[in-house]
Length: 196
Ligand SMILES: Cc1cc2nc3c(=O)[nH]c(=O)nc-3n(C[C@H](O)[C@H](O)[C@H](O)COP(=O)(O)O)c2cc1C
Image 1 (cartoon, rainbow, N blue to C red):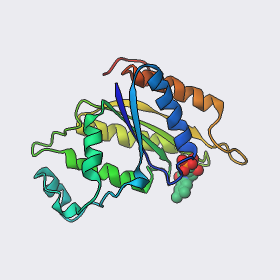
Image 2 (spheres, protein in one colour; image 1 turned 60 degrees about the vertical axis):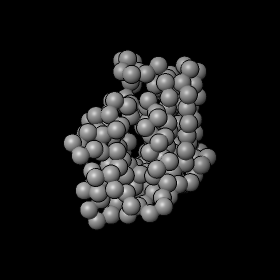
Image 3 (cartoon, rainbow, N blue to C red; image 1 turned 90 degrees about the vertical axis):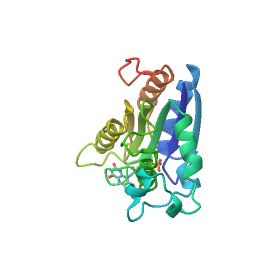
Image 4 (cartoon, rainbow, N blue to C red; image 1 turned 180 degrees about the horizontal axis):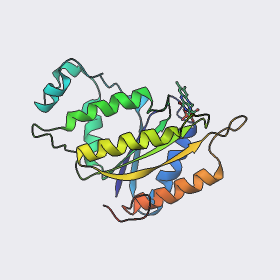
């Protein structure tokens, strides 16, 4: 199993990175190969006027010299794509959302996607000070996105930062991350069904 993880926080040693690292280490123990990149290290051009039409024609000339080509190669070579994000106002971080917008680069004229068949999962962290469960919104949006793209939704793990005074996810959250990572490493979803 090849897992490509895209980490979407400006903090390379923050809560989201700590959580996704546990997922990835557990997946590796099941024999998975993993790679993590920080989206803040890459340039991804915002979508432009008539982007969707251009994307369907495979015309990315208006993207300029951005890094979407190399990121797309990594996406296409993975079995599972694992996003790792802090929750920013009940959503993915802005950088990660811009990257997700550009997944339309993978669409073909018949609206099929080159990402079809791959697994999609998420690891997210948030403050815990929410008027509703913030990671659930992200998970629902990503599940719908996976369905549109013909991907297999594998689920998500999330951890609230216990405010005040906590420095990050606690051991219980890490254990859930370990469990999820082991399942991903075996090609299973969050509830242990073999998907890939
Ligand atoms: C711009 C911004 C918006 C945020 N919005 C939310 C939010 O809606 N809900 C929440 O619980 N936490 C929110 N947070 C807190 C972060 O999600 C939380 O601190 C997270 O664990 C940071 O992850 P990191 O250490 O990986 O960067 C927000 C933080 C920032 C900077």
